[in-house]
Every structure is written in structure tokens, then in C-alpha cells.
Length: 206
Ligand code: ADP
Ligand code: 5GP
Picture 1 (cartoon, protein in one colour):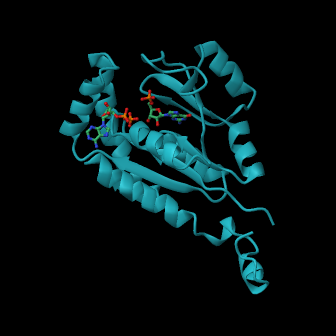
Picture 2: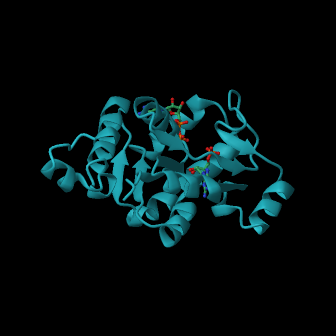
């Protein structure tokens, strides 16, 4: 039997620090792939097409959606976002681990459609701090920040179906918790098929 990878879905209100934590996780665990979503929003300074997102026009997104290209998609803060189905299927086929950064609507759709997936919701320590982080990031105009703050309260109310909750107050603590979650998930039997038999035959480390 082939080992499974970890499918990790992470949601958080915009500005809670999800991308910051995911970047560090992907650096420390190179075996994790990152599912690059499609979006109709404009790229932020420094964002790279194909690395952060595939930036597409609305018509392109709608055409892809109609071809059933997305495993899930949602309209978030006035733009479309979607996870390509083939990236997930390829990870499952190869037994590779994959991180998916999606909003709560997307997480719900994946929950209905995928098998064993770990769902993590990241909270900011407060809405005041969230506003500070969005302002400090400086990547969104004031109207967009207000919309993201308004949506934050609604998203947090939808967090009850996630497996894990994490508050990103101080980065080192939050990251240590995220790492602990990943390390624990790596101990699941599905990731180590045939382990008892290998131990019995004296070759557990193969
Ligand atoms: P998200 O991906 O959830 O929208 P980001 O990772 O882009 O959020 O973080 C938003 C801003 O907050 C960034 O400027 C980031 O450097 C900062 N940030 C992230 N985590 C923390 C933290 N624990 N304390 C203070 N600032 C943080
Ligand atoms: P941002 O514009 O700040 O990069 O992302 C805004 C929101 O869209 C975040 O909540 C993020 O998790 C979500 N998002 C990013 N990619 C996807 C995706 O492929 N599908 C869904 N449903 N949401 C996504």
C-alpha cells in the first residue's frame, strides 16, 4: 500500500497571518507542496504569477469553473478564488502532502468532497490587532481593508467545523503550535503502511 500524504486546509480571516505561517512551514517541511489557487484579484506588490496565485481575468475564471476545473471555488471579498482539482488529485496520487489556503466556504466544499483532510482555522488575537496587521501589510486600499474586517467576524463564526483552532498572537508560539500539529499528523498510521510488518521483519526504517 502506498503511504498517504497530509492534506492540510488552512483558513483564517485576511491578515491573521496565515501566509506568514505557511511560508515558514513550507521552508521547514519541503515535502509539503502548496496548492496555488486561481484568483481574479489584482496581484499585490511582490506576488508572483504561478507561485502565489494564478492571476486571471473574470471571464477566464468563469470559463475554467464551467469546465469543472476547480475542486472548490468561492467569491471572497468581491473576487473569485478557486483551487485547481488537478493539484489535489496529483498530490493524492503521489502520496504527497499539500497545504491549501482557502476561505471557510472553500473549506466546507472540500470537506464535502475530499477524504481524510486536516482542517485548521487560524484566529487573530483580536479584531483591533487584525486591523493593525492589515494596515501594516499595506497591500489593500482602505475600502478593501474595511470589507476584510467586516468579513473576519463572519468567518470566525463559521470556524466550528474545523479540526484545530490556533490563535496567531506571537509568531514563534503560533508557529510552534502549527509545527506540533504537523508533526503529530505525520505519526498517523495511514502515512506508514506496512510499518508493523517491517518492524517484525527487522527493517522498520525502509
Ligand atoms: P494572511 O495571509 O492571513 O492574510 P499575512 O501572513 O499576510 O496574513 O499577515 C498579515 C500581516 O501581519 C503581515 O504584514 C505579517 O507580517 C503580519 N503578521 C503575521 N503574523 C503576525 C503576528 N503574530 N504578529 C504581528 N504581525 C504579524
Ligand atoms: P487574499 O486576497 O488575502 O490572498 O485572500 C483572500 C481570501 O481568499 C483568504 O481568506 C484566502 O484564504 C482565500 N483564498 C485563497 N485562495 C483560495 C481558494 O483557492 N479558494 C477559496 N475558496 N478561497 C481562497
